[in-house]
Structure formats: structure tokens, C-alpha cells
Amino acid sequence: MHVLLNPLPVYGLAFGTLALALALFLRNHRVTVAALVLVFVGAISAWPVYQYGESAYDRVKSMSDQAGEQWLDEHMARGEKLIWMFYVLAAVSAAGVAATVKWPRTFMPVSLIALALSSATLGMGGYISYAGGHVRHREFRFEPPPPPREEAEHHHGEEQHGTETHEHATEQKSAASAQPEMEHVEHEQMQPKPEEGKTEQERKQLEASRLQLEASQKQLEASRKQLEAAGGASVTPSASASPSPEHQHEQHSPHP
Image (cartoon, rainbow, N blue to C red):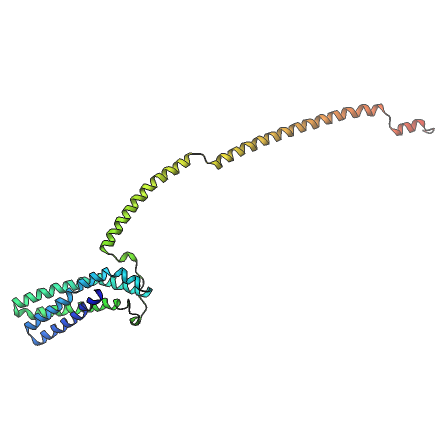
């Protein structure tokens, strides 16, 4: 439906704008009324085109390549920003038809206002449709695609509401799951860790081993002193009791 209806806002406004110029040239209020009707139809047709384009966005994006996706986002962004101009033109043209029918002499100012607004809106319609023509038609891509837009810039009414609901539910679920996790962490912090207990036990064992080693060293030192004392006492009597070989030689020798 979007592909079928999207020429109407452009071609319809083009014919309506030409008709308004012709009405000003002929100075005929009946031609002005016909031209305003054409402008109204072309402007109001932008509403279903916009709605069907919004509905087809996801499907067309899944069928497009990378450059087509960027052109599609650009096309959507332009339509969202400038769609209001078509609504204003539709309201002005409808009011112009009523004013021209009731007061035929007002067709000149009405035609001038409608012609200026219709021309501007026609230019905006061409600006929007230019990006839309690059989405699926690669033969029209004579320039690099626009920079990619963030996904947050594309808003759908229902999708936005669904996203907010999902985010709210996710936040509640995260808060509910975070509470027992915090309690579990606090419980683990209160309990002594196995590594810390093991380290403390090893430290005590090392301290006991060190004390035993010091005691053994002291015992060895005491034993060494005792051995030294015993060795000194045994050497003195043996030295006085047995004469040396030199002394025995001197006694038996005839020469002093």
C-alpha cells in the first residue's frame, strides 16, 4: 500500500500547484476551487502513505542491504520531521475552498497563499521521496549513503510502548534477583574463607616448628659444651701420667 500510494503526495501536489498557477493566470474562482481540491487530495494522501510506511519499516529493512537500510532510516527520519507540512496544507486548502465558494472575490489571496504553501510542501515531498527511492533501487544510488542513524531515533507507537513495558519488567526482575544475591554475598563475607583458615593453621604449625628447632639448637649447644668440658678434664690427667717419648729418650741416653 505504501508503494501504491506514495506517488500521490508528490504527483497530486504537482498537478494541484500547476492548477493554482493556471487559476491565477485565468483569474477564475471556479478554476481556483478545482485546483484547491487537487491540492487537498494530494496533501491529505500523505497521511495513509506515512502510516503504511511506518507499518512496512521492519519488513523492508529485513529485505535491504546495508546501504538500503541507511537510506531507509533517512527516508523515515525525513518523513517524521516534515509530515506536518502536508497536514497544514490540507487544512489551508480546505479552508480556501470554503472561502472561495462563499466569497468568490477572495480567490486571489487564497490562490497566492495556497500556491506558496503547496510549492514548499511539494519540495519537501520530493526531498522525502528522494531518500525513499534509494532503498530498493540500486540504480538510483549515485552518491554514498547517509551516515547510519541510531535505532533509538526510530520510534513506533506500539513498539515504544512494548519496549517501555519490557524495560520496566526487566528492572523489577533485576531488583528482585539482586536482593538475594546481595544477601548471599553478605553471608559469604561473614563466614571465614577456607583459604584464610588454612593459612592461619599453617602459620601456627610453622611457629611450632620454629620453636622446636630453637629448642633442638639449644640442646645441641648444651651437649657441645658438656662434651668440651668432659674432653678437657680427661686430657689433663693423661698428660701428667704418661711421659712423652722424648722424655723417655733423654733418660736412657748417655749424653745429656
